[in-house]
Amino acid sequence: MTLELLMRGGLVLWIILGLGILAVGVFLERALHLHRARVNETDLLHGIFNNLRHGNTDEALSICQDTPGPAAHLIATAIQHRDAPREALLADLHTAGLGEISRMERRLSLIALVAQAAPTLGLLGTVLGLLRLVLDLRAKAPLFQLADVADSLIPALVTTAAGLLVAIPSFAAFNVLVVKIDRLVVDMEHAASEIVQFLDTLRATGSR
Image (cartoon, rainbow, N blue to C red; front, side, top):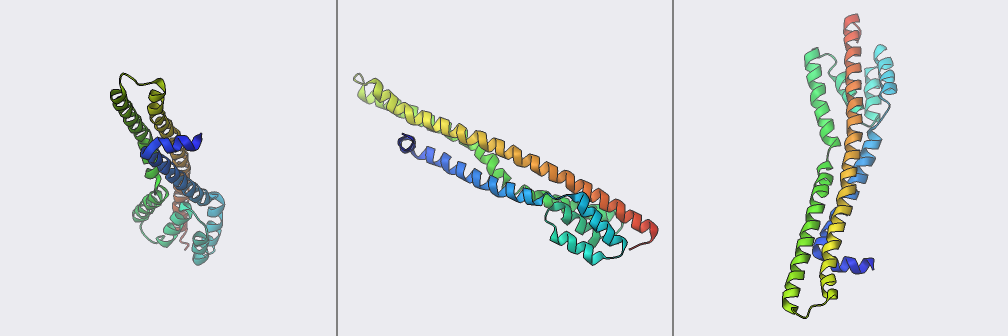
């Protein structure tokens, strides 16, 4: 029965299903990427601070390079520009942060596009199905039967249902990823604030 509905849904239905598969693929890739990017920045900062206190700058940078995620990249940026004026350092961190956010949001717009396009395509399939129904009724009038009406309505209803079934999970997936990104942004801001304060302390004490 399911295969029969798929075959009768027409081209619009297959486009909707293709968009759904695309959204699933993007969501899984982005969710895995964001999961790997989440680290305990408190522990990371603790190790970085210990190395910087003892002048082990290369070791601190090595830790950042071996640690995935945007927080580690921001810390590395701060270490590399530690001798720059505070305003310049903050500007470098801001630029680096924007770059990290852009990377985290990569392909996220595809899921939003699917969430918006799927119900519209479902509506298009419905309109096309109703148009076929009207044409069939006019061609067969006055000898049309209820079965003829049902045969024309089924594809229309199938595309509408498919559009909603794709759009609703896509919208939920988009919001899940947005929440994950927001959490990573908070971690980035915390890491950037902590490393800047620590470098200010080193400057004040004359350490490097």
